[in-house]
View 1: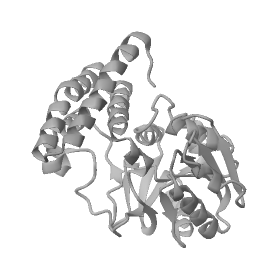
View 2: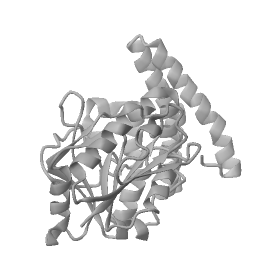
View 3: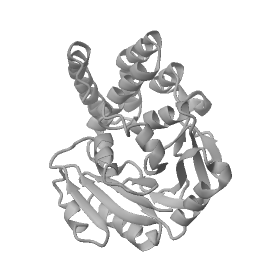
Length: 308
């Protein structure tokens, strides 16, 4: 049993080399090949992995978006599993042995997607799983109520992530997927430029009878935030846009419209109030900038169907 590892890079700096090195060091017989898709990086980070053993570097030349780049990498895969890794993630010595052992058990034959326990830079267990969101859950998040009552939102921050369990979604930082499932789903939905593509594929896998499992008995490192830390306003815009697209793809028209209205007219107020309360002029400006991009995109989507 082997996997091809797919890593999408965009200006990840030294993190990309550290990620690839960890796969080379700890991949042993589990990793057939490491496929790095570089989305038009300008920091030269992709050069650090060119020519490394078992590494195939594909230079896209520009930013394809995360899901589309993942699909490009997966098209090169030939193994029974595909391991999608973020460049700010790193494997430990027993990560793959444990994950593959779990997936090989007969009782787990219908587990299509496996994630592992993720440890952050402070050594804390990251809250890395979510419930499938509802329109009300999105509204709760938009108003910030899930910060006060975590169980109301779809982020599973109310659970300590110390035990193995079936979940709705594990995040894409470490995303071990059966290739038969990936192929049956036709990969990631490239409508999503960034964010929600892992949630969407998990939901579609669930609809086809496959489950996702959070396997807590082994760990991997994940810095969190990744290179999107560099562009906070755009990160917020991509989140808002992908949330809207997800809602109109999977919810009823009425529920999706509610999500859109709350996103456009309630959330900017709650975010701005939080920024003012924290005396963060930077966060306030980033919120305004993100919503400016959102309102520029909306007419293109509504009248021309442009999603990216």
